[in-house]
Image: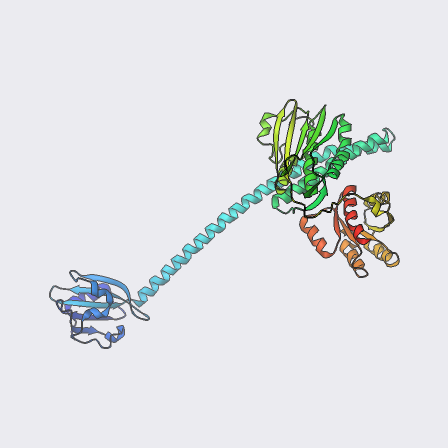
Length: 498
């Protein structure tokens, strides 16, 4: 059937390459008058004159046919997409279907590609934002590390010079032994405090410092503080007193964190007090918390430092100011980790007061771990360490507590001694020249699962401590060795062996 001229012109204009179907119809009745093209290609095998043209697609039911129109990308059957046109020359009316499957596929692929590009752009933007944020954090961490290293390098110089200088004077007999040892111990304590603060700040900053909960004697803690800090007070000619007010007998919480906060606060008070006194007031009149007030008669905190009091690396401007500037920052973080708070309550030219509030928790464990060295007497202990100075120090500490001590310089020596002697306790360094403390543990466990084995570590990171305890060690003792910590750990272990 010859194609009408209006359709020829229309097809030339729209370049229908894959096939077309034209249906002439009566505009008044919408009945099909003639069919041009390939109805089978479009899925109309029964398309005959007389049938309503609107059945081709539901969209035609709502059209008014007042003017030519086009419906693009209609799905007439699976795998076939076409455009539907209403074409007229005022005398004839046609529904024209043009196969647009190839064009639709191209457009679909283009749209999918554009969508994928947009998704990729969004992903890379998020990735760049994350990398930028990570870079900023790393840059800040690197700055803090560099600052810490520079600070420690500078601050280590003074106490190390004092230790070296007084040790040389002592060797030459130019200074009394008590004077030299006092200076050496004070500066060694200062070094230990600097290192501990730096490590503690890193752990707290990373959220890796776990809280230990146990019942402990508050009176014993205060006696420990008194004996630890009294030499510092005496060296400066200061009065140091601890005043308890309605103090509870025991507390439940992390004894070591509480002790560290109080040591930091009291050490600062001594550092910035030239004359007069330092006082610790312990107030337990509140039933829900215990308040610790650290008071001094120092020169106060400069006004321009108050707003940055709990900021890292900030120190006092007084000539005696030293340290890393982390003590107050760490103390505040530790207080908050205990569920408490730390604040400065007053400062003036006549003194400063810091107030620490610690919540009182219900004691579910009534056992109080106190120092009972008498329970350690007559125990046989093997100490393993390849550092002769540390080995001798541990030997003196334990012998002073009444223990019988045997020493070994290596894991091999320890194995030989253990094979022919009986011990009640093994105390081993983690890093040995011929192996590790874990190899000593394995040797012990091959013969006994119950014999206590304690590890000594210079880097007792919480994750390391957890791993060593899971490995089978009874406890982990941090270096430098502290007599009180050693006694506390042994007092926990030996009663269970009786």
